[in-house]
Amino acid sequence: MSNNEQKRLVVLGAAESGVGAAVLGKKQGWKVFVSDYGTIREEYRQILENENISFEQGKHTWEQIAKADCVVKSPGISEQTSIMKKIREANLEVCSEIEFGFRYKGDSKIIAITGSNGKSTTTALTCHILREAGYDVAMVGNIGYSFARQIAVQPAKWYVMEISSFQLDDIHVFRPDVAVLLNITPDHLDRYNYQFENYIAAKFRIAAMQYQADCFVVNMDDPVIMQYLDEYKPKSKTIFFSTMNNKEPLEEGGFIENDEMHIRYGSDVLNMSIHELSIKGKHNQYNSMAAGISARVAGIRKEKIRESMSTFDGLEHRLEYVATIRGVDFINDSKATNINSVWFALECMTKPVILILGGVDKGNDYNEIMELVKEKVKGIVCLGVDNKPIHTAFQEVIPNMADTQSMKDAVYAAYAMAEKGDVVLLSPACASFDLFKNYEDRGQKFKEAVREL
Image (cartoon, rainbow, N blue to C red; front, top):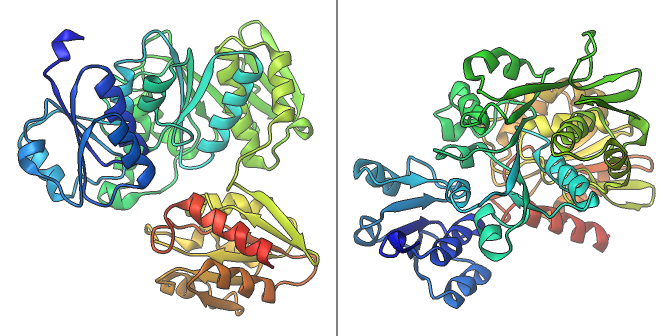
């Protein structure tokens, strides 16, 4: 790496992905400078200090940034910030952390998963299958370590990555061996000039650099994916999955017929009853097919896949059962940061629901869940600094509504509304940054408040 010795890497943002890129850059011989406009969390500051990486917080010093040969931009930083405008005007090279990591991945293989909903579950399930099959695998991206940090600290032969549209915005050569696109529904439109087409284009970038030998695994039942597939079709082989919707069984890919899941790839056919799947709900049938196809492409035997799919535990903060108190179930779905996730959560519910909603609204259209709310929800507890959009949407159909400013109050208000046989569901449909650090913090506070009951 001698040609990199004097090269300057500037990293904007010092959370998981930024610090990961900084640590990898240092290891690869770059001169690294980290700049965070906010306050750096203690655990990340500690890493930077231990690695002797120079950093600043509470500001961006342009003189330092302007000297960069490459800028790694954390996914949370918008192009609309003044520092990004300056960087673009100065024509500095900008890449995302997954792009930077990709340059140093060696001959390892990547399964990358994106979509508006279901990414985390599909990523965790795919990783579980590979791990159970004895693969040297790491789960990275939005779950676990960032890709760059994993490569720096403990490289693996296989990476299963959860990737958001923001991470795909600044890739140039990043190329997964298997790319999975689960679904596309409006989300994060505030970052894409409120143009759904821009967000769609970002999602399809996951497969844009793929070669013919790679695989692009897509949901045939998603109308947006199918509408735009021809426009963005990559060079790689496309493999579909579907819950059949009166279509012919697929000669290759995944489909469900008469409660049987079939995955066809190569000479083997994997058949498995959907009742054997450890994660329930229609949306998890899609997630399971995507994971199963990815595992088959990775060379895992059907027996191993079937066994792993029946032993997978699911994810924290995603429809996670917390407790039953005096006949009332409490379910933590804090990871539901958009309307579509809430739709999936309500679709799974079989008992009357007290719904805890609210946070930073990213432009939600609550009409999308209106029918399910009318059918299943008997009370709504708003949890956010600004709850007006929720009241406007639901006050006509749900007379029982309460406003709260803390998780403890929200849980108590929901419990007061509930009767034996009901379920209290935290499924906020919004980002958490008005009252919490992130959705994990929100989910933990929910669980603490429930336990206090």
